Length: 265
Ligand SMILES: Nc1ncnc2c1ncn2[C@@H]1O[C@H](COP(=O)(O)OP(=O)(O)OP(=O)(O)O)[C@@H](O)[C@H]1O
Image (cartoon, rainbow, N blue to C red; front, side):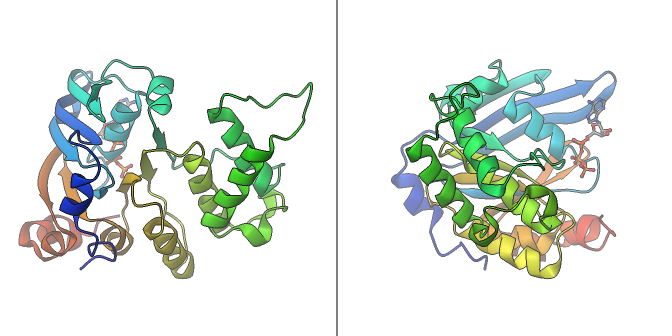
């Protein structure tokens, strides 16, 4: 059983209103003749932690890009907390509590860890950072400190990002995604390139995120994904072909044939 399965999904559903955090209906995304996504329907409850797995080219990143507004789906609808955001630009979805991390680093290497988090907090708050009058906003600074701690970077908070280890940089990216108290976060392969120790730390960080904050994690590392997720969605060739509890997915012969035993990346 996954580490978070003890918190029942039904229990959190009942306390979080009736609308799903995320609901996709019939989402298709074509790139010319190539169907990157075909008729994707997916519902994620408020506070739910979902893993989306699949081999290279399955459509996982395209799915994220459609959810964030980086791509407009060719057809289908996307609802965020009950609201149809299919045609909303990315910043409108951010305003509604959606965040994401990227596979490629989005950090300022010449600034300290804390400054990176502080700037992210400024970026999503109404009190914008000012280069003319660079006075710190104490409340935002306190939030930045909390986020730095939540991703286990308190001891290196004053160190320049350029000298952090790769794993610490990935932890920092999580802190940036958490700025502005999101309601739903999309984590794009956060374990990629991490050592076993760093992966364990990542699992701990994700497991300890606030209970109301749902997320989807795209991950090639099955071990990480199955530990942090309550439900798993398997994709193949742009389609969803299986959904279930982590233990069901792990034991599924079709999944094993296609993914676990198939030499996935
Ligand atoms: N901007 C684009 N233009 C054209 N084709 C694209 C574009 N983005 C993705 N694709 C294609 O869509 C398909 C799905 O790609 P996608 O990156 O979503 O898969 P993925 O599951 O995230 O793969 P990976 O695990 O390798 O990141 C692939 O065939 C890819 O080449």
